[in-house]
Length: 290
Image (cartoon, rainbow, N blue to C red; front, side, top):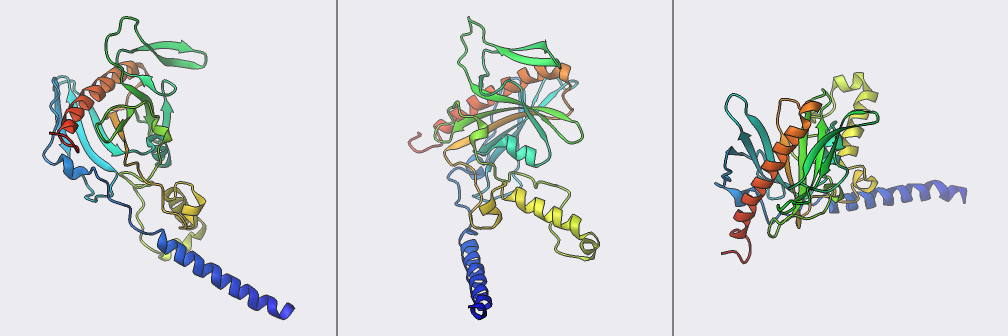
């Protein structure tokens, strides 16, 4: 019995390794291309009254790339412009994605709210010098636009306001779905933009524990904290085909707390105006459109 123990363990380990190799190769297949891609928006740029809109070129030309289209929007005079970015992405979890990249993401209004017709109210709350809430006027005639408002702060303390709405890919109509219900694949930039894979070298051998932690963090974040994905036994969660994450955000300079209500109103207004333009485009650029 004892003599068969070691050979039995070797056979079991060999079978386990063989199973892992086969399973990992099976789940390493490329992601399925999306039906809606950046190519569908070639040459298109929305026209919004009172704003200068420019299309931002895509850095990755891959049909399986979640990012679809990005615009920069400038409002106001040339002396005091407000700049915003608008992006359409196959449904992904924006807050989780940004947190993994080292940002602090805070919901400002506690979930999905009606963005249009609401008033951003600045008040005071115990322990908070600047507490924001929304109020819906009784006489509001504007059609509601569901969405979530976020404060996103970088590790250096620069804050920006983000507004997200989940829309249907079929007709770009808004839904009451929360962006946090989506998967969170790697989108746009690496977790650490200062780190690039370069293999094992002498510098890594000088600090083996630090290098191992960096490798593990990159792999674990890339697997989106899923054990089977980390072990390469499951294809990573990818973006949704049916739902799109529609994101509008303020661009630098950093938004101070006293300017938040004003910036939120600006971003919401741009968010709504750009979505109307995109919905108009979609009506003639989808199956059944004329």
